Length: 386
Image (cartoon, rainbow, N blue to C red; front, top):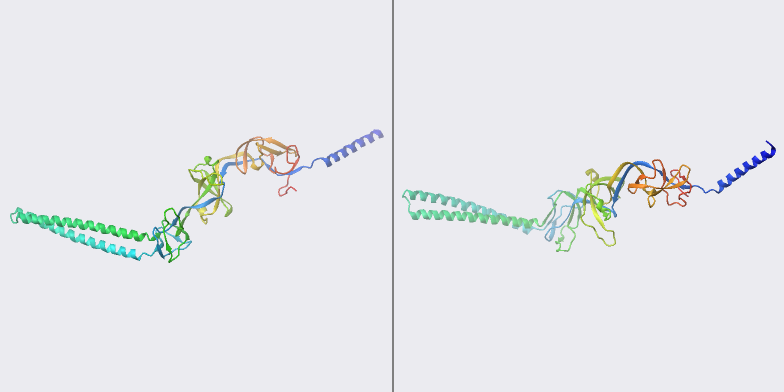
């Protein structure tokens, strides 16, 4: 090889190196992107409440006596546990209690009178029977027999009249007891006292028709709790009783409870300045889950409409409008692909075609210069774009 040839080869190599260096210096820098690998797993289609739901007690009674009066007994306070039938509040009722005692005494006297009248009636009937026997033997006159029969009939009538008066006396006792009971407020079921708005010695009055007033005692059965939450009217037709529900509570972050739809309200709420919704209720699957929960906690529900296992899926945040995703190829080129999607939720979307398991889809779609044809580089976990 001549010296001239060697110089020529050296010049060509030097030019190539310089050109490569210039290209390397001027080429677009790869865009840092966040990627997620296409994998297989479970995807569920679900709907969630539009506004915060509420933990509610299966039974809650806001109680007040049906009559007015002064509170003479108030044996309970907020937080107390009570049994069904236990006295919660009692109004002054000495007069009514006395009336009960009077009625009971009158009833006792009436029953004694019944016993006396009926004994006399039995005696009169025996005398009438003897008179009839003696008449048959010719030992008594017709007049004596008829008089004995009349006395027996009259005594029987007095016995029956006394029995009816005793029934009236018993009814008067029931009425007096009912009047007395109207001044006593009892727990209709086992539960816990949520609130007491009355004080000993205060006067309470029943609510006038159509005008609600504060209850004297608020009683909650906290042994049975459920969730009530509003679902958008667009999503409500797909919800069915018995569907699985994931329940989350703001008061217990990081924990989810299992539930079932128990009730779908048969009407749409039309609240001013709010989207129209349908209230849906869900039971907790395990009674143990409700231990320590308080009625009134805010809650959210996610109702599972459909679920599929072992399907190809991508993060929902990677899916662009029109069913498109950006894939980071092995050579760093960002490629746009059209996918056919199946069921989806806020986290994952099922993919029927367009990408394969192991492909890397880009989830940082809001970053500048992330577009088809650009070059990207996957960020190291924990790193962030500058």
